[in-house]
Amino acid sequence: MGTLRIFIVLFVFTAFTSMEIYGQVKLDGQTVTDLQKTPKYAFGVSDEFHFKGVLGMYDTLVENGIDIEAFEIVVKGKIVSDLVKGSALESYFEKYQGKVRVSVCSMAMKKLDVTADQLFEGLTPVPTASIRMLQLQANGYNTLSY
Image (cartoon, rainbow, N blue to C red; front, side, top):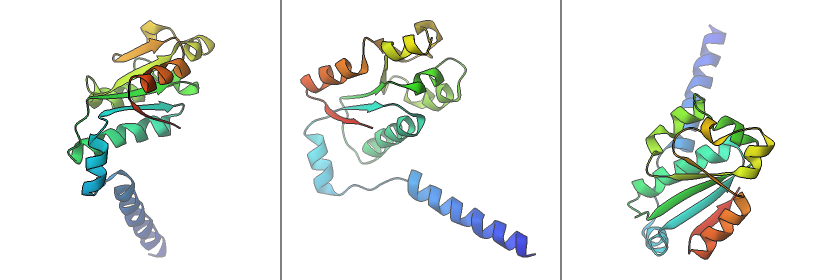
């Protein structure tokens, strides 16, 4: 009976912790007003955790009524190997098709032996992640890199 109680406590704790992490974040009015000023967003990521986190941020912005003109994730590093057809990330990304642009660093693709035809739909190879981030900044995007 003690093991069952421990399991139930751990399950409930995990469920509520997950809700806090992945649940909707309510932004205050001033934050929404500020974010409306520049409706273009770009994020540089190099791992799955941040890739999914940025997609979650997209959801948060939309759920808070923020108008998004453009939202782009610029991907580099080892995660590029996970952005291929048939991968778990392909399924995860499906709901963002046509809403979020994903640019993939061609240098990382070359280093990891990933070709453009192996990438799942909705991904766009770019010469380098750094150059793409600079280009987006020059075009007025709010940018963050993880």
